[in-house]
Image 1: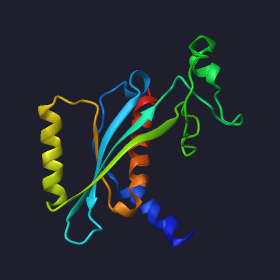
Image 2: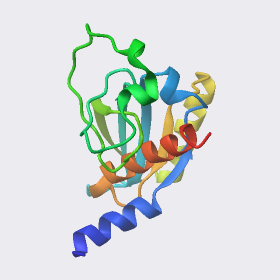
Image 3: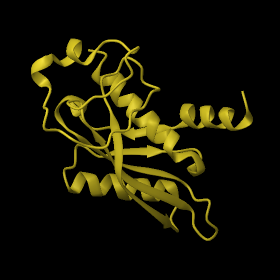
Image 4: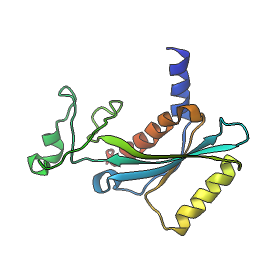
Length: 163
């Protein structure tokens, strides 16, 4: 394995999921907002905060034929809506998981406060707003923050489909 692949694996394994959405998020909701925090790579700043929303649609599914189970086996033929149209991005790293994801929103903010201070502020904000769907992730390397987002999604899928 190359050193970049080793680093990506380390990022995946060392990512900390501080806060996840409540149960039923994949089956009932179609948007997973998150804050991904990590030490800033920009000089003069201590933290980089990536805010995004992952769009999840278990109703609109295109998957390679060799992956099992099929859409009909999971949702039944009645769940197919022929009027749906959209752009789809699938994470092939989740074989056997009936979900497709896309990211439609992204905001990057460089902050002079420490990761712990920003984490505390974000947790307070979510509590004040009674937000139960936004996740908070701490990445060990902001250069590879999408790997930490993938870990966040994987942790939700593990919870959703382990029952």
